[in-house]
Length: 578
Image (cartoon, rainbow, N blue to C red; front, side, top):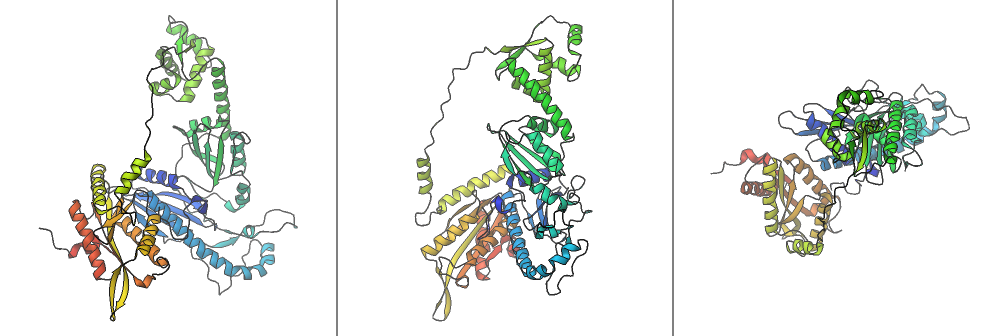
């Protein structure tokens, strides 16, 4: 996993930002709506507004990512890749850098700001003049916020005196989501909402009412004990997008409101560029109560997961059927007649949902209605259970590890060169079938020494090699592979990575290796590095040419005394192959 040295990539370090699943959904929307910019906005720990944009080109399908902070038109980073993990780590590292910069500037302003606090609070609509010696961050402007109505004895916190202003005319999510008005006034209200709790202590209808009253904005995640999950995105107190199991929208909200066990967590200020929920909370709660009553009635009538349904009177005419079920019918007559005609005493409730393409909620109401009208009856499925027995095979992890260790060099733990060639060939075939990209990086690490007044390069000692391998292993993804290459060089296999992504990753490796001395001894100016990279299909479509291009790029990096050379940068200088 990519991360900067000394910085954690756990979500708790980015409490209001997107997680990996959010970025996957973000990318999926961009792939489905090529040519349209999809955006996601949130507030960081320093109260700055961040905006992540992604757009997939119509022809190439490449996903272009940009991260903005506040109103600054210059992005914090621009990156083209479908590798969500790399994008996630770029977001984390970029925000961490901006927060560190912001904290250093705020600490310098705090002493002078304390003297003017009393007069500043007394005049909430007027900004105190900023000291000329203190530069203001270009990406955000500060405006005072009127203090909340509190007794004078209560202290006024710094966050109540000054908040980051959001331009109300700025469109964060075109046509769908904009920053909530007067968000500074909602800050303290949403902070009082429960962030995580058991559903039994805070039922879902009561929780949604609290969020609605506080005009909260964020993501609500719910998980039951049987691993059922639901996610609801809320804007200004109103649900805008919901998924519960395999249902979405209003039906997902209705089903979620019937859950009575499990736990939930609420993440504030997380927005979603999607709209699937249209009914009000009051309407959804009323429908969920009706669904709960009908489900309870069917359960008390003897319906189980294996129960089937059969008509009470098979000789019932169409006119008699209509007379019985028309009153208080939960749906149109065509749908209810189609359900009735499909009843054969063999299909369970879940099998009927799949066969009739009807939602569980609608089928629950229909079955309840037909049973109440004495048209059908519940029949326990008497089909004998299969005599087949599934016996899971034991997985011998020790055998797996022994095979993997036989492919590695004992002193470094890295894959040997033949193993690298095998995995490279497998990735080549996989990328050919799936039409995806991958990159190869070959590199050497040497120690600079002065011998007879001249600089010579020597192979690194084992302890320095192990330190470098450990640092690179902490940066790479689980699917990336590092191995020995030739005698004293090394190689990286980066699946689903284009040339630009490989360049970003190698630059992170270079920074990681030079941030601190290797093994506590070798300084950055004593370390010689040469990285060369080539990619499929951007540079070549043949495996041999791919490795040759990476070798040539590494040689050019060594000759030019540059840490990295991409083959695409020297492609025009290479003579065509015979």
